[in-house]
Amino acid sequence: MTSCEIRESFAIDVGTIPNPNLFMTGLMINGFRYRSLIKTIEEEEPLFDGAILRKLDFSSTNAKFNPKISPEHPGENLIMRPLCPADYARGFVELLRQLTKVGDVSQEDFIARYKSMKACPDTYYLVVIVDVNVDRVVGAATMAIENKFIHRCATRGRIEDVVVCNEMRGKQLGKLLVETMLKLSEYIGCYKTTLDCKDAMIPFYQQLGLHPEPGNNFMVKRFHE
Ligand SMILES: CC(=O)SCCNC(=O)CCNC(=O)[C@H](O)C(C)(C)COP(=O)(O)OP(=O)(O)OC[C@H]1O[C@@H](n2cnc3c(N)ncnc32)[C@H](O)[C@@H]1OP(=O)(O)O
Image (cartoon, rainbow, N blue to C red; front, side):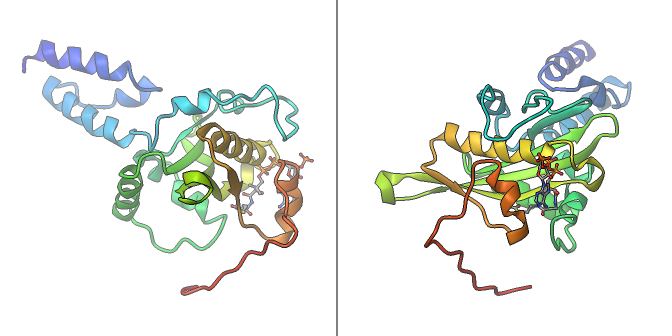
């Protein structure tokens, strides 16, 4: 490959990524820069096609947003997008510690889990909100899709692991994350979407159109703490 071809590949690849500035850190020697770029693009590979987030109709929402926000415009200096491998370095796992016990999760553990999710297309939708000013993950939520035989081979969604970092709470991001997950599950065609939460969180989810169903119980058997 000539240096000219290398530069051409660089230009094409940079054009496909959201924030090219992040990718200008490779060595100036052509071959080295190209190799470091490829590694970086892998690190920024989204778990799923983020275009789906822009297709969600936020013209009407269960949540009241004031001011209005959406996946495309989550707030000043914020972006919402699918999880990517580089989010480990952006504090994704640390953020989860504000939700529950996480334990030791090395970068290798994280990448292995990311890859196992990525290998199941249309199943795991992990969305993050990133503060681009500080390049940190400040919010996250998951929707897992379960394919069933019942209800004529229906699909259901489960919302999991909703969290917003302490410093960013009260800015509607929690509502935005859950509303996005609900709209996403509707868009995908789920016949229902559920979540488990503590009693204290019921009012939060009720304002988003979720409600406890009389007669339906949440049962659990725990095998580990
Ligand atoms: C399925 C699950 O994952 S359940 C676990 C939920 N996650 C957690 O408990 C982790 C720790 N908590 C958090 O990360 C955050 O407090 C979240 C995600 C619950 C809320 O995030 P925020 O960005 O602060 O919420 P947001 O600003 O959108 O708040 C919206 C509204 O919910 C209300 N609210 C926020 N937290 C709570 C709560 N714990 N209980 C009841 N209401 C709440 C707010 O008062 C606000 O009401 P308003 O719109 O009438 O003013």
